[in-house]
Length: 116
Length: 112
Image: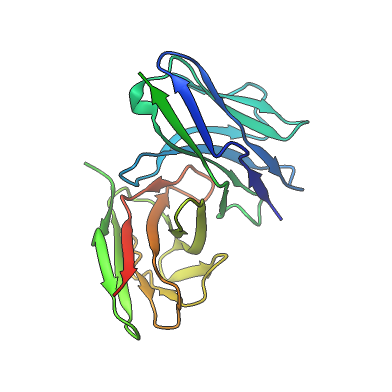
């Protein structure tokens, strides 16, 4: 069975600082994908970044980058130069191998608060 | 603008009542999904559909039903068999099942 673990229930960061949100995963699949989503207080889920298990380079999207360490089964999200609008819940999710391709398994989330 | 529309935003259910949550997308996506989110928790998959007239159970399908008669629409019915329906329900779609899923704004369901 696949599992996502986010060990930080809450994070408090000063504006303009970089922040790392932790995500570890467990799977026996060789092929899988890892996603990060942002959920503001309004509730919608916003896709941020994707990393495939066979991707050799860490994914980057603007201020977001993914620190992918396959041997350690970790996929941490790094937000550079944090902004007040980054305050939200952040979820790490995994799409499994062929049989689990349709299913996203989510972690419990980390609530990020950016202080001015 | 293309997107996913969920309605209503808030819904109240009486005991023994079935209620239906609407999800419509104009992104021409093949795959659609329903998730449930409880307070302080991540999302759990209820049902998903890869093509019209076909759908599969997710991890928590008991007490729920779906239909997929049109590519654009994937309504979710919360039946009276679902004893704890109070939650936030999110609908998502993707171009095909391996792509990132895009979400609607959600429906918050409560029991009267």
